[in-house]
Length: 115
Ligand SMILES: [Zn+2]
Picture (tube, rainbow, N blue to C red):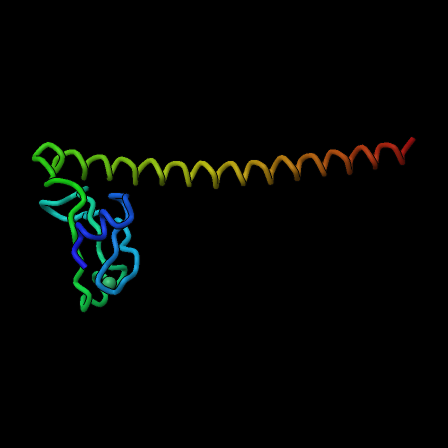
């Protein structure tokens, strides 16, 4: 089955089927000249290349894109780490606040016994 046949068979340029007859997922290249460039490939691409189905979705990455994509990717990774750290910190604060609340209820209970 050629890629153009599968393109028109379903009427959607987003659905491609590999030579195994399975839907080929859209993947993104993160290497060298093609960084950020999407492609369809067999789900076994990179693990078992017997199918060999591979079709570029995007045109070649321009020079500016090759410069920007790694920088943006690094920035996203950095921000994701910051968000994860902030979530962990927030969780610790929530636990501390709950503990302080329970402790204050306990002291209020003790004070009520004294009277
Ligand atoms: Zn396949």
